[in-house]
Image (tube, rainbow, N blue to C red; front, side):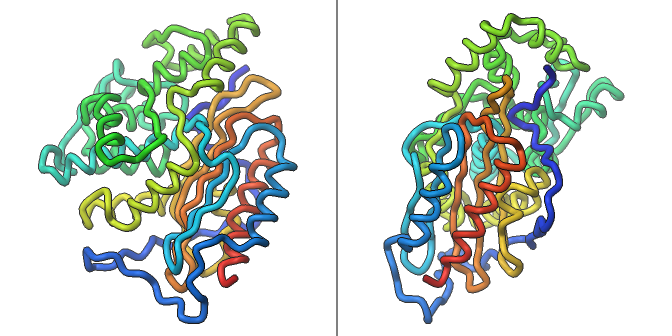
Length: 353
């Protein structure tokens, strides 16, 4: 069966998918706490919010982790299975982006630097850039354009090209460790990750046409299931929801990158085109939202790695970092979207409480 992968985020349309404008970034390098004089400082999540999240989480089929962290006006964090590791899939593109921007801040890479991409660099699943490479044999793309393509369009080849530019998976792992980002792993790159999950050994011809799907579908069900079960039990790209929201909080506060790079990546994430009917569709009018999605492989009836992470900003400037990680579930796509929308909508509802 041809199914979606870690960078595929094609959601069915649901009503009222709000389009959020680009996030505000203060010009000063010093963090600015938005004023909320009518709401007292509170370092505990509202009980009603916690109860509703737990109730809906318990009803949702499968293994899902949720974390919500308020950054301003009294920091708090709440959620379910917050410290367990869940497959990230394309959520991990966030860490590649931060790693290369860290190199930009160090003067080791420039945003207008050209990166060469050939047919041998093509990845698997969602990679809109592939058609240009095939048509021309090879192309050169700036680091900035690859950043936008990897985050906004969740392009696997664009992301792998950035990964190659930073020095490979070890460079991203080193960034995560150096910044003390906690329980966030980084895998071997898209090709090895997805072929391993499927129970295949990577071959470059899998990057073309439907070769990967055909090879995967030819495997015995038992072999595919064993490979997927191994991945889910100990995801090589796993991360905990709590570590993710704390990393997003530090990013938003300017603690991970320079002010210019922070503003750039948050702006790019505000233009993400994947997952418009995930958390974003629950964000009320007047609020802002930026995010990165992830979508894993499917072995019916189980879907894996269906994720959304992001920062939701209230009209008064209060920010909430959120992560929903559906490690494995039998829920339909509309059910998954509905749960994600419920989380963002409920957080907004309890904003002033």
